[in-house]
Structures are given as C-alpha cells and as structure tokens.
Image (tube, protein in one colour):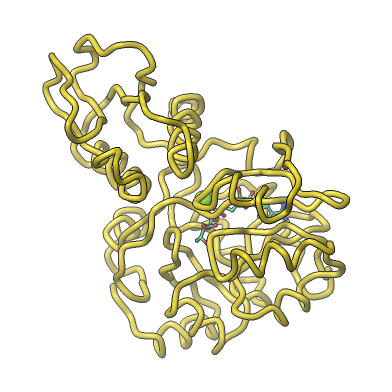
Length: 309
Ligand code: TXA
Ligand code: MG
C-alpha cells in the first residue's frame, strides 16, 4: 500500500515499520529510539540477532551524535560520497544507539541516502534504523511489488520509485584505514582514489556469516561455455545461448548500471515463474559496478541453496 510522507511519519511515531525508497534499494525503517519497533523489525525480516542494522541519517550533525569518535579520513569519504551509496561503520555513541541496533557491538553503520523522500522523512523524524526491505537472505527489493511479495499487499510503502538496484558499499573503520566489508554501488577504485591508500577486505564482518541475496532457484555460475543445461539462462542482450529454452536478460553490457538495477528483479522473477534452476552468464569484465554484480552472483551461487536445506 503506497502511503504519503505524513502517513509515514505517523506510523513511525506510533512504533510502526514503513518501507522507504533510497538511492540503492528499498529499506524497512523504524525510529532509532523505539526498541519495540526494532524488535518487530528483526522478527519481520527474520534477521539473525547477531547481524546489526544500519542507520540512515540526513545531516553530518546526526552522524556526529550517533558516534563516539571519528577517524580523520571520515570526512574525506563523506565529502566525496554523501549523500550516496556508502555505509561507514565507526565507533558508536552507546548511549544513543541501542544495543539491539548494533547487535551488541561497539560500532554503528551510518549512511546518508541520496534520495529526496528519504532525506525529507529523516529531517522530520530523526535517524532511521533501516535494513534492506526483504526477508533475510533473499534478494533486496528494488520496487514496491517486491516489498508486497515479501510482506503483503497492505504493507505501508512510501513512494513508488524504482531504486538504482545494488546496496551501498560497506566500509569498517580500522586504525587509520578502512576495511571493505561489502562491495556495492560505489566501487573500490573510487574509494581508494579518494583515500589515496589501498583498502583491504574484511574477512570477519558480521554480515559475512549469513547467506544473502539468494532466490529459491538454484543458480549455476556460467564461467565455462553454455551447453544447454539448465534450459533457463540469465544472460545479456545481444548474446545467443544455443539450446536455451528461456533467457532472462539483465540488459546490455554496454550499460552496466542497468545490469545492476535489473539483477534482483530478474532473480525475483525466476521465483515468481517457478523456475528451479538457471545458468547465469558470468563472462563479463569484472570492473566498476560489474565487479559488484559479479560479487553478488558468486555470493548467491555459494550460499543460495544452503538457505533451503
Ligand atoms: O544500500 C543499503 O545499504 C541498503 C539501503 C536500504 O540503505 N541497506 C542495506 O541494509 O543493505 P542491510 O541491513 O541489508 O545491510 C547492511 C549491512 C549488513 O551486512 C550488516 O551486517 C552491516 O551492514 N552492518 C550494519 N551495522 C554494522 C556494524 N556495526 N558493523 C559491521 N557491519 C554492520
Ligand atoms: Mg540486506
């Protein structure tokens, strides 16, 4: 159910949950100080309790209130990428950020989304606890239909824009540098250019323990040549897949942003159509946003089926 900004404010203030659009994917939002709503959010998403929730903000002042100390190069990153698709994990102000948001950690993940409606809402009600709007482990939602599929047709959704399609990049502050915990819409190259130092990957981020982004269908990584099995292919415009009975297209490789934007919609469509297995074309340059698309596909192939077992 599509709602207005005023209705969203009312629901949030009354301890409720609303879906909100952002520049990356839809989020499920509750107010920061509303512990009851935060618990309901965990239950609704079926989110494991050891996986912390990120917080969305609309100003640097809010970022400073939620944190206890900020690394020097924090502002280098925010100047370059906020508002935008970058979540920064830093020391939390434990008096303000509830333990349930942090999953007991001493840190908090914050992001200023580049979306006018989301920013307007946060200006009215303050920082929002807002994970992606999907059942834990499944593909993120990039349109209101996806949210209704997961949470029912009456679930309140602010706005109706489709989102850009891939989650924010997640960096964790460590000493004077940052660890890359999740590739996302902003590429590693862009970040390294701003920081002027290379960044390492985090191997132990809390989100890494859990499966993500997976449809019910079994996805087979197409690194070798396609020989017609399975009969369903997830591929690219302008390519031929001899023997395929059905091809779901992610778009044209000349337009990588479209591919990123279509990925979750195509994965969700497979499940809608009752497809049980698909071969995904993995022959593409792993640069820029396509590196993130490749990362998501590999993550689905690795963890996807375990969710059903
Ligand atoms: O683009 C996005 O980031 C979207 C939109 C809605 O803003 N949100 C999103 O939220 O993808 P979620 O909850 O699906 O993913 C957030 C990730 C999780 O992997 C979580 O483990 C990590 O952020 N995270 C949050 N707080 C953290 C913390 N204190 N330490 C380490 N990781 C944290
Ligand atoms: Mg998520």
